[in-house]
Image 1 (cartoon, helix red, strand yellow):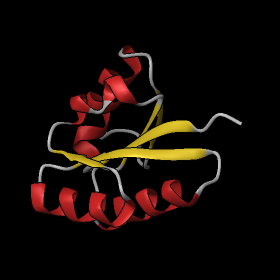
Image 2 (cartoon, helix red, strand yellow):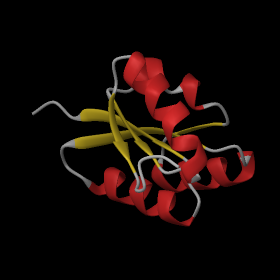
Image 3 (cartoon, one colour):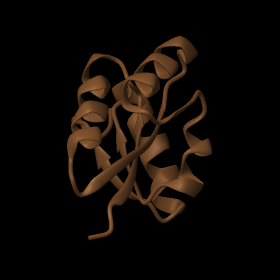
Length: 97
């Protein structure tokens, strides 16, 4: 079975759980994580053997789906950009503010 390539955008406390779960799913491959805090992105990426970026748009060419786990005010802008790029999107609640 082909694994879906996933990226996690925002790896604060909740985003770290998303990254862990995607890394553990047999049907998924965690390709990368994005966070404005470079040190945090690098730490989480190192834990899961994937790439770290500070600009989520760098992940889009390499993934089929993303999980948006950023502050609520950023959900709409990021989710829309990902959808317009043709990616499947999971947005942590609330959807927008």
